Image (cartoon, rainbow over all chains, first blue to last red; front, side, top):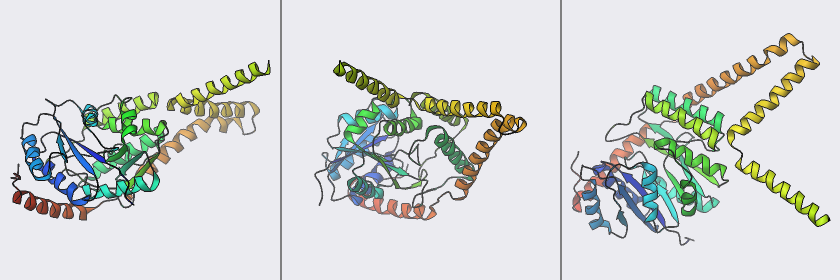
Length: 238
Length: 111
């Protein structure tokens, strides 16, 4: 028996002209019977992402696809806050626009939340049923090492700390995001750790993650330093 | 009089609760370290274990922790779940999506 739930899917974009069209198609394909809206928060992409979104609004309706753009790159955390202001659902999904998060998992998130009444359902790449494709051995080693370190220091209660494919109750997202100050993927870590400390009920679903179909994702020395600084910050402030 | 006392006791519990709720993770870790240091010092003083061994205990602890960490990284790396078939499925999804969108007037020329 379906409840009267509405899901606001917030997708921050920057230069995702092709991917945003593919993602939106896949969302409509995989949750046709769910009441949802997609909120695209574009940071002034020079490649015409916003034009594509307007074309998609012609196809799917501008009540289902909301374009809430910003003038320039202003960061991920503020993109979610901006999207939240326009969200009319009682649940919010956050996901990436680069096709690493596949919309076919949306029904899994929704089902898990309904079954358990969780406040947050987060996707994890690191358990059986989940997985990653397109990572070199070095990348996997860094990821695993980072994970073990974070678990030893923080006891976060989730297996994938930096993942950004999540379903939140809208009130929970609003509450947690107001106390987070980090940037980038440390922001994702801070969100889930703070939510865990506040006692919110968090569940996980396995997801598969295919790294960057179009484009490339980087992990260099500066990212590692940023990560370690983020860990220390979370250690002392959560 | 008893009302005042029970109010005082209630307040004390509130303060303890507050402390626990707001207790930062680093404080929990420091508490744990202080506790095991206290155990170590008492072992030194009572000499249940020969002192020469006791002095080395912190070193054993750190080395074990390091080994445990390396083990977890190694095991995790070996068991790292991969999904090569997902890349194939994704390519199929992309083709399907492009077909539909082209048909409906959305510009999906490659970038």
